[in-house]
Every structure is written in C-alpha cells, then in structure tokens.
View 1 (cartoon, rainbow, N blue to C red):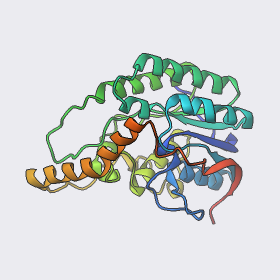
View 2: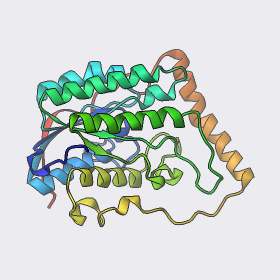
View 3: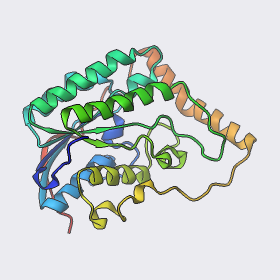
View 4: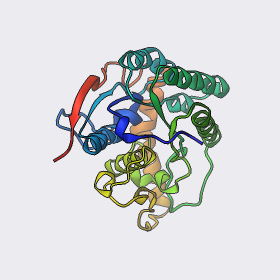
Length: 274
C-alpha cells in the first residue's frame, strides 16, 4: 500500500506538471491566474497547519521530458516536504508515443524525488471525459491511460508515495466537470480533485474539503439527452474550435505554454484562511 501522509508535517509543497496542475480554467485567484486544485490544496494545508510554503512550477502543454528537465531540478533544490508529480498525459495524447519508455522515465523520476527526501503525491487517470447520456464508447487513449494508472499504483506502492486514486471514479469522467475544450477541468472539477487530494493526505475536515468526506465521488444530476443532431453539432464545434488548433500546434512543433513562466516559481507562504 502507498504510505499514509501526516499532513501536519507538510510545511512545504511544490507542484509539478502540466495544465492539470497549473489549474487551467479554474476561477481566477488574486494574481489573475487560474487557481486550480493545487492552489486549493495549498490553502487547505495552510488552514490545517497554520501556514505552508507553496510553489507551483507546472506549465500547460509540458511533456514528461520537459517536466523532468525544467521542473524536477528546481523542486529537488527546494527540498519540499511534499511534491505533487503528474506528467505524461500530454505525451499519451500524441500518436506513436512509446508508453513503456514513458512509464520507465516516470518511475525513475519518482524514485529521484523520494531519494531527495520529499513525500510524493501521484495520480491515476481515468481517460478522456465523456457525455454520460450516450452509450459508452471506447477511445484509443483508454489503453495507454489504463497503463499509466497501473504504473502509478505500482510506483506509489514501491516507493511509499501518496496516491490520489481518482482514475476509476466515474463522475470525474463526466464531461460537465470539464471545460468545453474537453482537456481541462471546470472550477467544480478542480474542487473535486482538491478534495480527493486532501483526503489522500489525511485531511477530513468538511470545512477544508468543501463537503463531507467522499463528496467528490458523488455523481452529478441525471442529464437529459440533447439528441443525436445536437450532439453531432457540438462535436463539430469542438473539433473546429479546439481540436484543429491543437493539431495545428503539433504540426508546427509549438505548445500553448511555450511563452509562459510558472505562476508560482518560488516558495511563497500561504497562511490559514480566516
């Protein structure tokens, strides 16, 4: 089993990864950047413990090798009590990815972070979001994402990491918890992930979780089917607005995060919420 965390010892927290951890499409914080689940978790830790120092190095679009090269050395130099590490999903989205190589690099990085003295927070993944009013349809991404989750569980067990095992929670694949681009969470999606993470860290105060323990697993209200024509129109609109530009960036070898710097590059003290 993965190691249980003692939240009272987690006085420094560094978040690594891509847009999932950057917090894209959550509500805006005081600095004008999206909050995201990691900011919410930092606030929860600060409220539970009085204070926490927090950095978020994640940048949208980053691939695993980029996270390892750009973010991991910074995190290791900071020597935080807790590091969240979630990278590789952008690689899986790309055709032809070498999944065994990807997972091998993932495990090597977790081992390095643990050897550096940090507790490491890992995630399983549930694959692509879906419209639950339709019949279930498999995606070519389901297999690679399942392999990623199996690896995350095994690595968490082997190295004594904290695991937010969210991959099999069906509501987290409900498209209503995802932005219209179908790649990033909505504010409620970020809130649910934050609650899942805080529970995995041993926090169970409903005031911190924004609800009772396990509320983030609860399904959304039943959705009235919009009809096949409306579904098709929505899919075409999504493809034109989001998919084609994404493909265009891949063909040009550019990323949406190329010109961005981390929103919290240094450890900053977060104090307890009043």
